[in-house]
Length: 241
Image 1: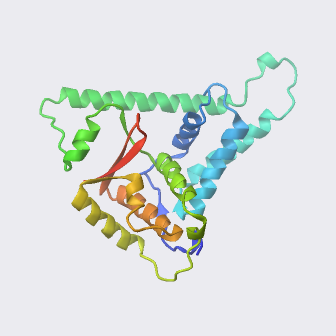
Image 2 (image 1 turned 45 degrees about the horizontal axis):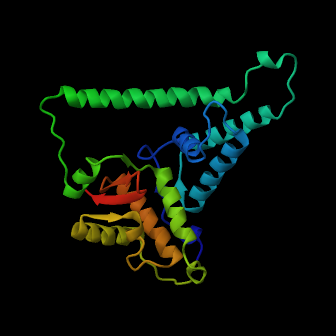
Image 3 (image 1 turned 180 degrees about the vertical axis):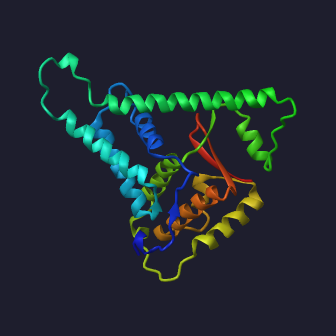
């Protein structure tokens, strides 16, 4: 059964990141200099992510398509011959670099303001519904995991599926809602699980693994779980909140 035969659709809305976050993710992942962006590579990788999300029935906003058109336009302009003094002609890639830098600056300011507000409020006490989450977040080098990091981690899961399990022809399959209930039961019992452990709980066939991933995204939207990564080890951990 193909992915598109799964009728469930995830809408990104404002819960997950937007096109600027995807670009920054690609820049970091491919270790690209933001002032010297290889536009052909970034455009190709960006479109691959959009194609993958379409295949997974992940409904993204029109902003992603607008950015795709912008990337294609910038790419075409970089291929045009230059006229006159090259030093006087602005690099077309600056049309992408400038807003990315501004976006990074806005993120930095927002984080600083949030931290200042918390420090300035003497009555502020952060509460945790999960003791494991508290211990994990208070550890060193821990970050919240975004959509595109999850996609990368999930793609590795799919790549490791044995060839004889990659196609699932069964008509009966657990639904996303049923899988959410199963995951909640697991997390209520364990408190936390690693990302890889979640896909080892009796879910082996490709179609069922995809359902599990869609259920995970829906649970993030519903604020049922928190997902964080320990940078030194790379381990992604899921917490029930």
